[in-house]
Length: 199
Image 1 (tube, rainbow, N blue to C red):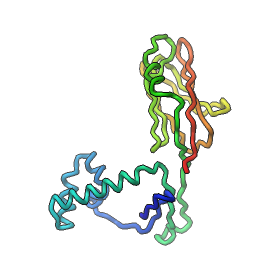
Image 2: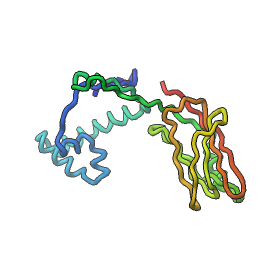
Image 3: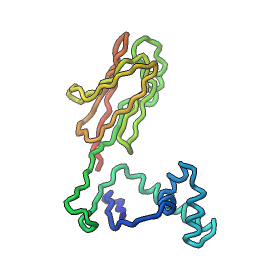
């Protein structure tokens, strides 16, 4: 892959087959997460005939490059699959807008302190890499998501005390969305979640 941070474009240059161990090195963060970091490190050192200091230097450089590339939420993918035998194969691109909530941190703290019988918001999490909004609430039987014209987009039901749900904004081309919590003793309507086109 060739990465252009100015145009936010990834271009497929070549496809290279890797053995399982080399794949573990290429995706070292996943190897770390799964507990195979030491195996990946030993394999890298064997293949490259290097010591631990050289491995650590290479790993540090790779992590710095990863962090730099990770500052870009949305990459545009450019791939000519025909040259790899994939004639007429198109890469589907998802549109994922950035999410910006109208809630302040202080408001979220205050919402948790409410002691009414109506639905209560315990936490709101926004993941702009995935394009998801996570809602944790209680005293809630269902959550309904609405577009800016108050058209119903999605409904999820709750059958437990605490309700944890996730909503994806993938392929939503709207200025904003809101949600409504419904419980046995009333409703609560959220503030806006603005959906911003990422350029």
